[in-house]
Amino acid sequence: MTACSFKNFLTYNYDLSLCRVITGPKGEFIRVHCHHCADPMCMAACPTQAIHKDPVTGVVSVDKIQCIGCKACTWACPLSIPQMQRGLKAMTKCDLCGGDPSCIKVCSAKAIQLVTRCDSRQYCGSDIHE
Ligand code: SF4
Ligand code: SF4
Ligand code: SF4
Image (cartoon, rainbow, N blue to C red; front, side):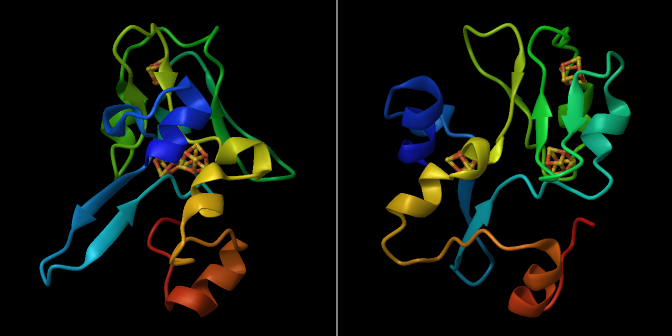
């Protein structure tokens, strides 16, 4: 999480991370992050078309110039991923670090992997956010 905040905001601050880690019912750690959905609800909800999905990479990102800060994307996302950071006037969300995720580089347990949607089904058994 601190790697994410440093990559995006040049500071080590859990509160600024664009991913989260929560504790599950059995005490397990669950990483909550953007799934760059095939049919993103955040994108459908945005009234200014500020959210785009790259047709080649599939990355879902926010155009901060077009964003009016209405938070409709946060309410529409099943995981409430897009967040308005204090001091910023536009929504922020994971953009996969332009294809080179910092969070993956620092995970010593190798618990994070960047795989295709197809491979994720094989790896995890299911992909809940198609
Ligand atoms: S922000 Fe939410 S709805 Fe949008 S692509 Fe990411 S997980 Fe999907
Ligand atoms: S906060 Fe910005 S990106 Fe999100 S729905 Fe509103 S205008 Fe679109
Ligand atoms: S890919 Fe980048 S922006 Fe997305 S959660 Fe990882 S470090 Fe943060």
